[in-house]
Image (cartoon, rainbow, N blue to C red; front, side, top):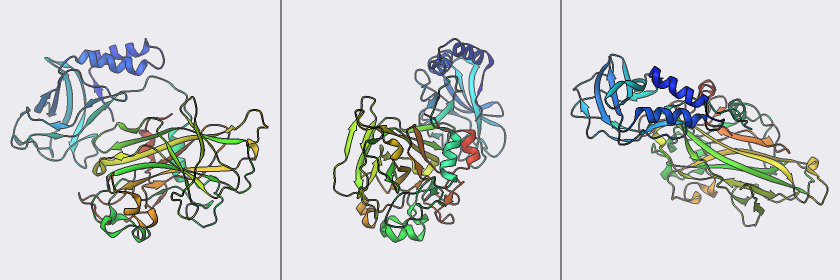
Length: 424
């Protein structure tokens, strides 16, 4: 989404970024604009150059994740002109310096379904006013970093087939060399859109058109056939989840810390079983796990969980990174004998407080979806899940959620590559 910035302000901000050290360039650019806009800038909705609604912010415009944020609220003290028609005219949302309309940033505005980056659900009238969700103006990236993950790898982790398969005693559709990633509940997570296999395990009370409101990212570690390594551990770091809502071009951080929890899971339903893991937290804040050969269990990990705005999701992306490390430096390095694999995915829950055994039989949650299986090597590798269309879509697209949404519950890979989430 193109954000337009007044020329003088843009030139000064670019110069500030150019003069800053790498790693501080993004902050220099956004900070310069924040300072130039000054205190109490005015937000306006303009139609054909005329202001239809406006409000003043309190203080400076906030900066969140290299974007300017206008927090959700009702425009209680708005100035409006009655019956502004969203179906006609050229609309923009604009942030101006108080008392100086020549200093601004702005983006295109349109009605719902118009494809514009900012949307109005209907005409603005004096009677109705404006009720606003969080809005973001994304800044360009000036800092350069070396990352393990890439946008293309995320796309591939959904669309390509499994690199390897886990050594399991039961047959699973996702554990075949021909299996790709899968989107299950996707971006329209209502229970009535589950396929029959999902409904077979989900209790009836959750199979309505109501949205499920909690999200839990996960990853699972497996042995492959032939694993003989006894002096190898698996190191895990940087569980991250980002959500892109339909009303914004900015990916919002759902999990940005290293919160992880791991437990033994059985090989039949991949659900929790009693047992203690050989696990430590190292000095970098990463988790190291010893996975003995021929274990009777798999290792299930989960990241930070919380409620989400289910009605407005355009895409969700979850990731974690893994590698093999030596368990005891005094003993021979046997990582070449290690055969481990991992995939990532996520589950929705009807709400944050309901436990798995009250959602589905044997706690087998249908899920948001999962990415392909990847081998774990001595080099850091990212393992990804994203709600993309380039893989199996396992939901009933014709079913309608409570707010009227139906159809495809994923983002196209082309759109994802044009506006990828933050990468590490």
